[in-house]
Image (tube, rainbow, N blue to C red):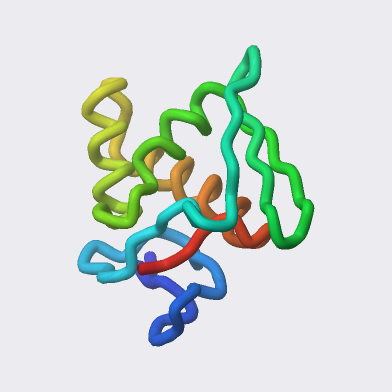
Length: 112
């Protein structure tokens, strides 16, 4: 199995490929200057100011989103959530990876 992140060396990654790299230096962050979050009955609505894009996520996505603060790597976020919800780390890494990929494709994530 390959552990890697695509697009290194840029300020914004091109996307995550497969599993999250253990020693990744890039840290995902919901762009605080360009994205607004609003709680919805079953999760959160994200609004991208520059593109007018809207993304809706459920409560699980909100839990991931709250940890995308630019201080932790995606792997660290996944590990914390796996511990909190007593889930297998590999399954949580895959779920977090898919979620970040979806946000990244729509321009909601900055990489710091």
